[in-house]
Length: 157
Image (tube, rainbow, N blue to C red):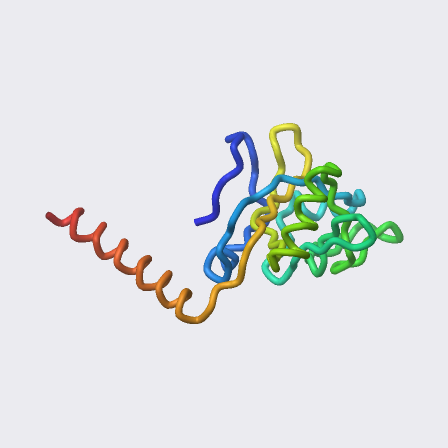
């Protein structure tokens, strides 16, 4: 299960459940995201997906690439592109830390959860991650299955 944001007054829009299976998440960071009006309206209806997306540092800025936000039918001329690059808002210090992790340590920036915070702003939690190998994935799966079985045994006995 994905780690929830610290503040309990939030509404999850999209979650990347596969990320914790495919990657070792070293740390995570809450970032803002630049959206248009029709994108925010579409997110309020819950029509988005961040499972195939990733974050990248290009020209000194952080971008969300391949994130899907469905077009709003009644947006008319003011609609948006579904899979456009979206700018992520982060401080210079954090950007430098992320750039160092990606460049020197070979890490990947993976979106974990997109949600509305208590103020109604769209936030994205990205994780600084390292890819798992097949054996690591098998170990994670076996550990998860054992924990489920252990819970069933404790519940019965």
